[in-house]
Image 1: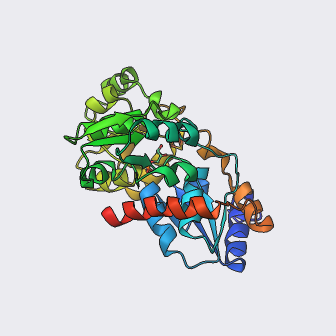
Image 2: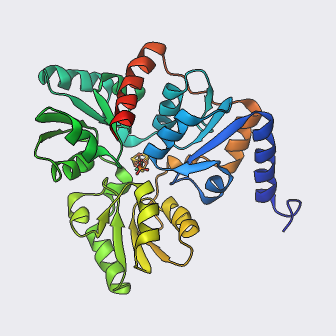
Length: 307
Ligand code: 13P
Ligand code: SF4
């Protein structure tokens, strides 16, 4: 079908043309809508996107993901323009760790280092000793010399880390509402329907779900795992956007979502229309105050050096 007959195709073509004129690069997270992933220059998990953000040469980064990810790109690229097509694309888990509460807890735990999951505001990253993502949380924690660690905000990822370290992990009571709703009952029903299927889950899932998984992986690690496994059918315990990415990377395999409703409404705020408008109007620039950016950058760069 030509772009004259298919308005989605026309939108994509306009985006690609304008992207060149603006000298822009489009970065997208694995949970983005399929059509947004398809026009991106790079699609990845939080760690891969942070790394890619350090290698960008374009004048403008259009970040298709949620705000904390776009903020991370801005902190790593203070001289470049970073645009987020919808600034309301937040992360509820991020909001569960307000900076004032983090400062209060730090004051109660003198000498205890803070490991902040990247799913935090730039202000919280500025309070942390080091950041981590789901791909490297265990490695980051085990690289620290300290025996007690304050880990925030995800209690489920923190619990997963605790299983892989002798250190004492002090948890924060945050969680991802999307992953929290993935239930073992749903998984058991899917396993009955697909008896030979493997189960991969994200470490933001609850400990009982993690317990029955064949592998616990970041979204980027899932891409590599499905290519290497002999399993032909795979139940995917994370946000449904992942299925689009996995189908593209391993086209011969069958991917089964937990449910069509396992979705992150904030990730889905980014649409092709908003990506086009972002490039047309140079909206919405992500700004991080210099002092917060400088301290946040230290925590992110420390993570990138460790792993
Ligand atoms: P990944 O780093 O595995 O892509 O996870 C990011 C995220 O927000 C998961 O909910
Ligand atoms: Fe935040 Fe969960 Fe959405 Fe990831 S899936 S961005 S943790 S709400």
